[in-house]
Length: 363
Image 1: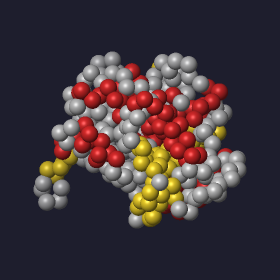
Image 2 (image 1 turned 90 degrees about the horizontal axis):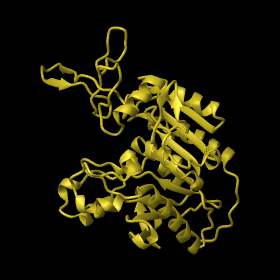
Image 3 (image 1 turned 30 degrees about the horizontal axis):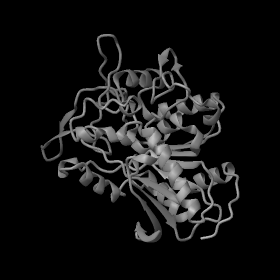
Image 4 (image 1 turned 60 degrees about the vertical axis):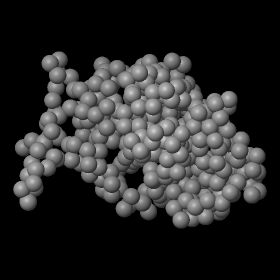
């Protein structure tokens, strides 16, 4: 254990290198706040290292960048770790321009990386990635216990934006090691433990129709806290649309984008987004995180507006009897944490209601 700085605060840190013999091919850090909570919960951070592949000649160089990239450690994670005093695991799993493993999508589910060209000889490291995350968590918990920090064997998993998707995706695959999911900026596209809705099949990661041996008993034990902005337009499951060009006040041609800089569709005179349908009347994917089939199911069954989807997913969770809360806050994808005091109060109240254990801690 060594001293380390996270967001300019002194913490303790345990660096763990990748250990294939123990079932994980990627390094990670365990952050231990100096003001440790007397009843600490373990937080698993849905870390999203930036794409630095263009600057790296070798995969080891890419790993080094990922190990030190904490840009996606969002305000919620900082609150849970530095303010509530919970140890936090930060995995370092690099992405490339083509491949976004921290989405934990169908490519990882199927171990199918054949379409990716960058670092092809190293892509084997991503095989069985969900199982690797489980092994990282298990080893990190052992490290904490070995350092006299008594924690149990289930974690709080928390992420924002793409990290929110990871959290809900991972919960489908390994619910047995998750106590609480805290996921923000969901875009109305979180996983649901269903196989179909309104006649549309929900395959992994949108649902469980092809998840073998889905552990419903353990999934039902998880408590879920989902949140997003009332004016959030960021949508990884958005259907295909024509690029919208316009000229700004200086006469310069621009492309219409959302608050995150991603292309966004034209709004018609009735206030509706304008999307394209294929010859069969189905939606197709504008971006690459979800497949055409997934995008069509999400938007046909849940709607094309992210907040509309969010509310319908709340209904699904409620109808299934899941222990969940869904919160909409003022702001968009970028500005929602201007309301962090209210968000943190809500999540603290949620945790107080849903966490029930007592640890004896000696540091």
